[in-house]
View 1 (cartoon, rainbow, N blue to C red):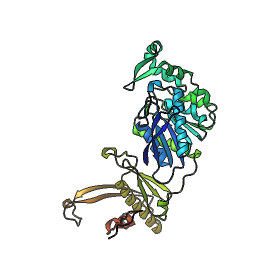
View 2 (view 1 turned 180 degrees about the vertical axis):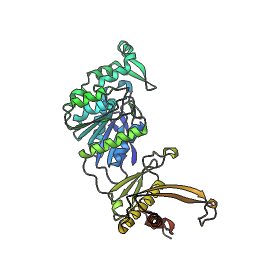
View 3 (view 1 turned 120 degrees about the horizontal axis):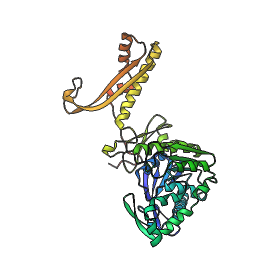
Length: 413
């Protein structure tokens, strides 16, 4: 995934800060626009993880900060729910002008209420997703109950939300309570996915029921069981992102063929594409699309197996397939194969079978489980055959990796 910072103007001339997430291989098949939760920002980890899941499916994602939040210009105190929806339209207009209009609108919490209200103003939108959204924007006013009297009396007050201080004006509350998001749901005329956690303590599950009941088909509901309101656990955000990507598939154009770079590999190679930030890498193998990454402990995002995991997987898959082929050819009663592998680095001095005498060497431990009524001789023969798998032979043979730079010419001698 490649991520770039973008800015675009509001109707009033303020610049809003956004992040545009794009697939590394090939142009996006469609675009999604993400509206974050009340007082949150585009950089919330849950927002980023959901965007990643969509990018994996070839969808570009624009996530941005509303006026007065994050890197966007303006004063938060001067904003209203209506101005937030205007910001969404400005973001959609920018996408339309520079790429293509968003097909998917995604809103988290109050952002969910915003996309429900604004969908009709974004003609390219075909599908809407809400995550932990209130059925009525005025629900947010309940979070300000303890400060309501001061806001009403003085016209504004400073309040603490999620550990930060914000100035809230009376006009903000009045605009929230006048908003009619739920009335717009029945006339949405777009596919709707409602996602909500039964354990959401900020926005109760009854809000999801109200939105779903008001909507007409096609509509879907997914319970984010066990998640909190902010999807703060990485697994919850990844789960939500993958479900959104799978659900949206029906409302998107077909995935394009692999990029020209991948076509150059004549269907038998691998294209590995890593973005500007982090280690997350997209792997394209013909029509297959996989991910590689590193654990969070070393700076990755743990969105995919490590390169050595794939090395183990290649040997494991080849071993299993080779044993299956041999058993089928010889008519052996092999009912299944389980191969467990682990890669490590060991000191050469501790490796009796290694030719290298010093330093460290790579060691792969392979444990094979053979299922079925096999006798001792059949098991022994299959164990011998395991070492004949092509990947095993490759790992034990002399391998040369020839590397060149693509798109550059060698300097003159």
